[in-house]
Image 1 (cartoon, rainbow, N blue to C red):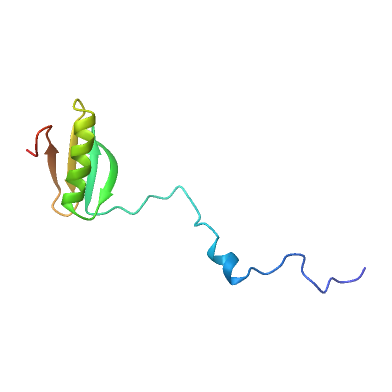
Image 2 (cartoon, one colour):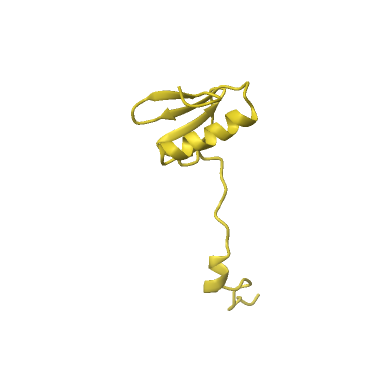
Length: 87
């Protein structure tokens, strides 16, 4: 039997490498300092307190019955988002 001198697959070009999506796994997503929690379940994380509070206010306005908090991972402190403001 003769040995194959060529490979059956073509090498990826530079443009083809750029279009490859990142691998999606079951690992934990990167978490920022401020974490938005709805009914004690983490929903999103933010780098700034203002962004987390803004997202929390939007959720609280749409769903006033749920408990919305912002957790500061560095200071280990929860801030409760009220319907009209922050407590």
